[in-house]
Length: 106
Length: 415
Image (cartoon, rainbow over all chains, first blue to last red; front, side):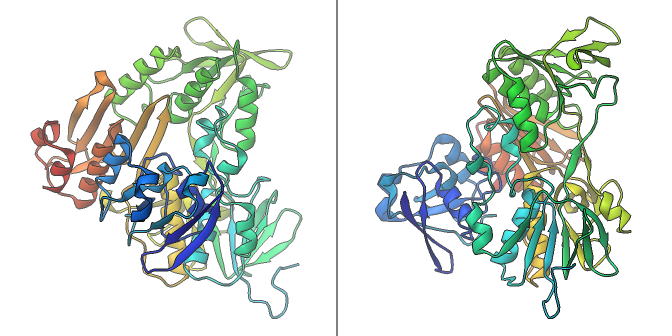
């Protein structure tokens, strides 16, 4: 179990508990957190679950795979801390994680 | 009896508890609809994702919880009523009510039809034998899974995405798989020749057999159970199960019976509105405008279900229409990531970027004047994303530049 805080573009915070083994994307969808679309359901096929990982968590979360990087390259407003949340697996080590959402996923 | 008793304002009724229907309810709440929402679904399950049924779920890599679109608590917290295992018989537009099997009536202020599609039936003698299966629902997938395993042989009729994905999953479970296709190539209705050839050789390498240009005549049984497929020419193929994957038919029956405009699908506009202002239709059951292509068409895909769910929810909530999407699709087979954007309509040029031999390439389809209409990308996410941008921007590209791998896709799409 990890507490993850999702912050919408307008600053609205959504702190939710996410079960280990789910992805950060699934944690948002299953709790109806807006701002993450995840059109492909986690297949790393659409880049509509783009998030910015809080600076304090970047090292623990790690970087994207080559496949993910290619997808991210074409997302809007990409930053060095951009990740596709469907590719981040939740574990106890991520308890307290903070991610921010971009203005739009498209 | 109606759920809208005296003094209770009727809410939104969603017919169909699939990806489209479930998502529409979620978007309505996200967009601020606070009135009642009821989802009526034929299946016993709350809305779930269908794409994994032929992939991860069939291979046992996904459980019911991960399949679910939302957890059970979501519907309680968001006050979305689920009426599952419940069939809708008719829509009474005059009284704004849906009629459930058994006669109960649910009043609606706005109705969203998300009835999906049904698998096209195989019209051959023996198609009703035990072991002749289709793959549309979780229950279908459960039945199929039981028929697979070491020593079993699955025959797939139809070389489309569902059939190929199921064949790949069957191989992963240790079963033999043979794909029977009437056309001379795989994916004949949905993909270009380069892709057909790539998938054919890749699946062969994984031990899948193929019977192409094969006209099946009947399915023979033993003790009421499927035993072999027989053909006009050639030897019969013995098998333990037959999966029929020959396309789907939109479920527009109740819409048609209610007098809504339907032509092989419920006709909708870009706000998912039908010919009745109180009725919307979304997902596989619709025929919709395709703005880039100047046509109407059906899009059988999750991205389309989500786009139309947003359109309907936004229109109902009085919000600005969501951004227009380029149609897109994906398929996973073995370790291949297949992504398609756009539609091959009005295409004059075809450009292959990358190397089909190395399993990493993209096929671009362009108009006469060099605008990308469609991209089919195999293990090439940058080409998929860049192609999608090019389709949306309508920018002209030089064919040589598109073909040239030394120019990064991002530069081709942007510069």
